[in-house]
Image (tube, rainbow, N blue to C red; front, side):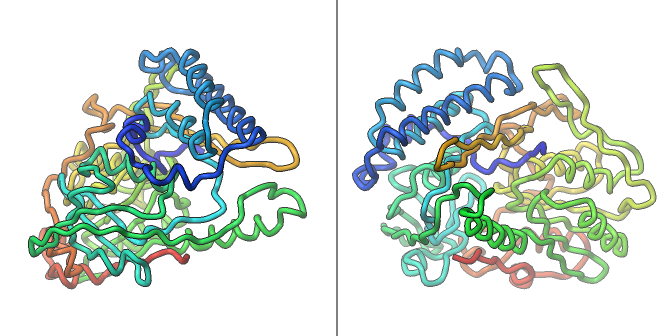
Length: 444
């Protein structure tokens, strides 16, 4: 299925290694054996073949992709650890500097829970959540401004690089912070990672893999709960918290039916990473009495307009406010920008992430007695908006910019939703707004 959701984001792997993100971690990785090295060589070959066949730019942004493959194959052959080999595969794709083209390594035998969530507000990085009963809960607090993370001065580009590296490629036993509290106190903290053991995903098609299959089902149930649609009704206004664009038409239609019972809709797309093209089409078509061009897809086969068909009598005709922040990506950004270009709604919040391409997901597995599953996301199209511009690396600038402060975050307040409510003509202060959709940690 075509998607507009960056599971992992832009990064410069060579720079991260050179600057020592993983100091003290290499020594804890096991040495790679001959069989593991051979599997990684197959992974690199599979991804190289898929990239050559499917990447939207046949010129690969000027890179000699075959020469690059040979270089990185040699590096895999010289890798000393399995983690080092995975990082090399990721670095092979990193040269394209493309938010939707990346390596998804095999699932580890553990899950690393860092115990904190970070978010960019304007150009500053803040701790927004800490998980109870973790080391982070003892040392970090919501509203702490992150001045450095593992020695990096975190900004809009660096945070995505670091999070992909630390969460996907090289989970660490500890993270070093320098933070500044809302009161101005600067302190250094070392936050220990909590590890949850779990099985590698192997062959889920055989009787021997039935436990893996059941485990996957449980994890999918947890994800569905976290991605459910939430809403609140306030004085003739529907406030809809939409966590992603990965829902079916029936669910979109259900929520739009509810919206049509109100004069005003506040659609909260903050921290929404995007999702499926089909969901975006359905959403856009639900707000216009005519067909609307979402974007022009620029592919290696030529340009093609992506058009959302109007839902006719089932559209929402009331007033619309769309909330975005630095966590709004891909389809969420496209939706917000379309509302601006078509003068259909008012966008409120912070500048979005600027991670806007169209990609396809390519799953792979190695053959043999042990099957190892891995994947790649490969960009199939660049997207040009109706004004001829791309949102990639640019993002959407809100019509009304509202940036929470460290004090807002520390007190659990939501000034962005409060401002949208004010524009909608209802009373909802920042403290009350912050209680409408409480953050939920996924089960460990």
